[in-house]
Amino acid sequence: MTVHIDENLVQDDAGAVNCRHCDAALGVAQQPLRDARVRESDPRTAGPSVRADSGHFADRPVVLRQTFCPGCLTLLQSEIVPGDEPSGRTRSVVAR
Ligand SMILES: [Zn+2]
Image (cartoon, rainbow, N blue to C red):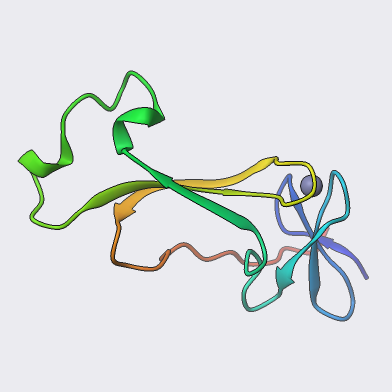
């Protein structure tokens, strides 16, 4: 059975995770965005709601980390996080 992880990700019976828009391989159940493309930039590039330099509030570098589908460049995930830490976001599959 194929399950939709969210509006962009689908998981097949074998546990492979693909893009729902272009079917590009993105990862596996345990690491659904393993093969996606990642770009890191200054958090202020997220938009007008992020105005201050993160250096005023944190001793560590803070980045805007965006994850994209390698096939169609759909934005799959966006987070403002310490640049020296991996993503802490998780996903769980809900059968529909
Ligand atoms: Zn795609």
